[in-house]
Figure: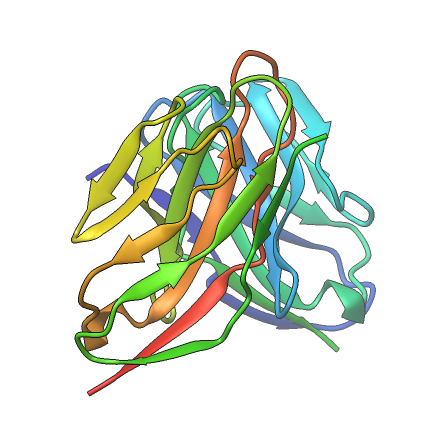
Length: 113
Length: 113
C-alpha cells in the first residue's frame, strides 16, 4: 500500500530534550516536506527536500533541522524543543513539485512542556 | 509572491444544503490549484485539482473551477452529507518555477442531520 508513515504519532517531552520525528514514504517520491498545523494558522511549511541531499527552508524553519540521506526518509529534528513548538506535524511527499498531488502522513502531535 | 486566501469559517450546514467555500489566490506563472480535505484525526488527502485555466476538478460530488480572470477556485457541492464534516484546505502549487507550497488557512465544515 502506498503510504507516508510518521513516528511517533504522539509525543510529550520537556524543553531542551532533543527529539526526532521520522518520516518514510514507499512511493519513490522525489519531493518531501514537513508542515506544522496550528489553530487559525493552517499549514505552514517548515522544510522541504527536492531530492536526496537537497533540502531548503520553508516558511517557519527556526528551531528545526532536517536531513535527506535516503530518498524514502526525511526525519525532522528538534535539537532543543521549546513550548512554542507544540503543534501537529505532518510529513508529505510527491513525485516532483510541479503540479503534483502531495501525499500526507497521519500526523505527529507534539507537546513540549 | 504566491498566496491563498480562503474563508475561514467555521461553516455549519444542515444535511442536503448547498456548500460553497471561497478561495482566491495570487500567483506568478501558471500554478495548479488543489482542494485538500482533512477528516478528524487524519492527515490531509487530495479532494480535487485543476492544473490550468477553466479546468474543472471534481470528486465525491465536489467541484471547483479554475478561474484565471477572477483568480478563484471556489469549492462547491450541491447536497452535503454529515460525512462531509471536515476541514477543507485550498492550496497552490507552482507551475513553471519552484516556489514554496502555499496552503490556505482551512475552512472547518460541520454538517448537522
